Image (cartoon, rainbow, N blue to C red; front, side, top):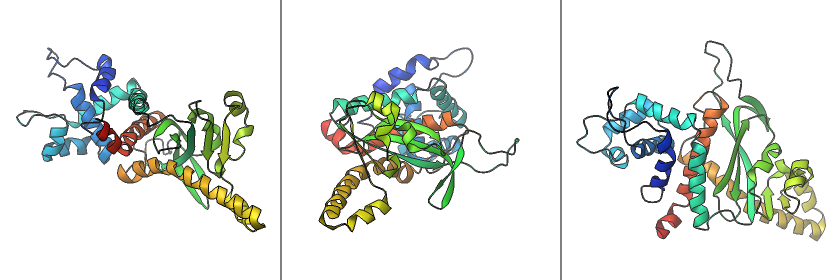
Length: 302
C-alpha cells in the first residue's frame, strides 16, 4: 500500500480543504495531511474506531511507521484529531475524489473500463437498536426480505469490470430499493456487454436503459427455477444450461469486491447514522478494495 497508492495526488486533492500545518496562536500545528490520510486508510483496512486507532498508534510501531510518525515524536494524533479529519473528508465529500483518482490510475494501467461490465448489489446491515432519544431506528435505512429472512440496513450497488473484479461505479440506497432501479448509474457507457444475476431480469425494457444504452447487450442470468426446467428439455435445453453456466462464471467475479469488504476489511455492518456518511465510507472501501485486488499487478508495474 505504501508503494502503490498515489499518496501525492490524494494529498493535493485534500490540501485546499485542510487546516494549515504551521503553528499558530490558536494551538498546536496540525499533523501532515498524508499522515492523517494513512491513518484514515488503516481505519478502513482494520475496522478500527477512532479511539481504537489512537490506542493502536501508541501500541504498535508498525502503524506509526506506516503513518510516517517519527519514533521521537512527543505527541500522536488522538481520537479527536482522527475524528476531525474524517469529518473534513465527509464535509467536502472527498471520498468520491479518492475513488476517482484510484480508478484513473487503474485505467492508466489498462486494468479497468473495458468492453464489459458486471452489476450486482449487496446488503449491509444497519443497527436495529431503538435505544436512543427518539426510540426509533435510522429513518434513512429500511427493511427488505431476501429469501425467507428480513434484513435492515442499506444496499451497496456496484459495477465492476467483466475481465477483473475491479469496481468502477458505486451507488447506495436503503435496503428496500430494487437492484434494477440503480443499474443505469453503474454503467460507464463504453461497454458492449452487461452481465447481471436474475434480479436484473427485464432491464433492457426500462426507459432509462433504452434511452442511454440502446446499443448495449444485456446478458442476464435466468432464475434458478426456470433454468432447472429448461435443462430437462433435451439437447437444446442442455445447451442453454451450459450457456447459463458460462454467464454465471463471468458474473461471479463481481462477488469478489464484496468478499474483500466483508471478510478482508471486516465491514459487515454500518458504523454511522444516515445514508451519506455510510455512503462515503463505502466508496472509500471500494477504492481501497480495488488497490488490494490489483496490488500484485500494480507492484509489478511500479
